[in-house]
Length: 317
Image (cartoon, rainbow, N blue to C red; front, side):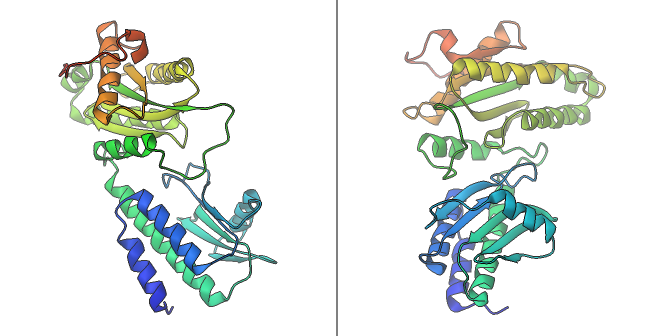
């Protein structure tokens, strides 16, 4: 397929993006340039997971969003087609192993040559998004890695991220929770590192399965995990985290049978530095470990919010 010089330049510019946010902004710009004043709506699985529902990424010149369920149903019926033709629209489908990972709805008829060009660039965008995602994934647990954590906290506290949030009742706030597997050194000593790695993988899976698609789950280091999630208030956050703690405690691990996790969490304050937020969650986690383990502690419970806190280097296991 021939790509125009303009299309080639757009393709190169997408491949040069080195952050997901920059890539999202770039594809929105490309679509505006190629489809000026044309109604469009683009949907994407946020973390490229097949488990996730599609979220609205960008919308322009549309008084009302198209019927996403209808578009998905058509795409699932016409499994081998990338471009779906409607009476007064086109729909470009992104697929990964036959799973629908994204849709671009174009609300007017345009020349097919332009439609093919846009389809090509959408695929370039998605390939680059996958490349960036792989660089952010921990190879053992398939969670986001430690190197990605700081960037994601900064994105959240500065208001970046997906353009359209999920529907909700009342204002939700972002929280940071740190999770530590209790007595993990005993697991490695008694059962070996192969079983230890399996425990890490299974705990990671429990975390992924028990948080929402728009939350972010990280392997923070060793047997420690971090989650950035949303709740209306501290009580709701504590309830959610206790539910996750119970799920892990009740899970039967091969050979090890049962183990527990301790959790400390804090509210994300956009005034704080990343290191301060981590320190607050770490202090709450240390409190949970020190006072019996297998429990959830809110940093606010410690009664030291707002005080100057010295740097600590506490052994948790």
